[in-house]
Length: 149
Image (cartoon, rainbow, N blue to C red; front, side, top):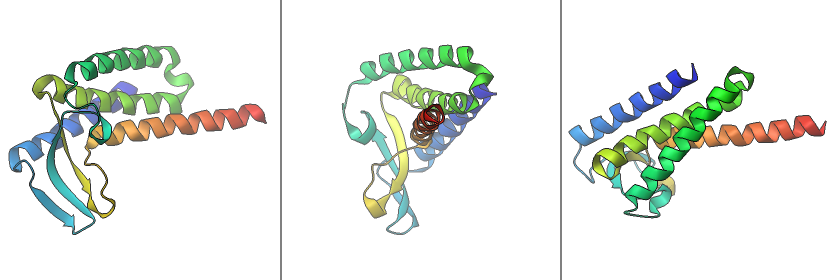
């Protein structure tokens, strides 16, 4: 089931990115909620918040290592720790989604733009990674509290 979740994230991520690439001009912004949330066609050749620009092969190598680590972890923990496995499947799907972009074009397609707070433009893969990491942190906190009791 966890591999299906990761595959669904990859599919949704790639489908939405394809829509942006084929139907929007680079730099075009479509306000969905004016001055709050826009769809903005953007390309990122770095990591989160645009850091480490033009380090394509560094990201490819890191992503391969992360994907292998997640796959090994999913095999080891499987259904014994469902919250952790769900979190890892989210990170896995997001990592593969952005990996496909980096390998195929050298840049990641971003388009979700919260203009209200001037937040960096992001995509479905980024959301999955963020939710997955947040879920992992929640698990660590809950397990720590459970062990303390």
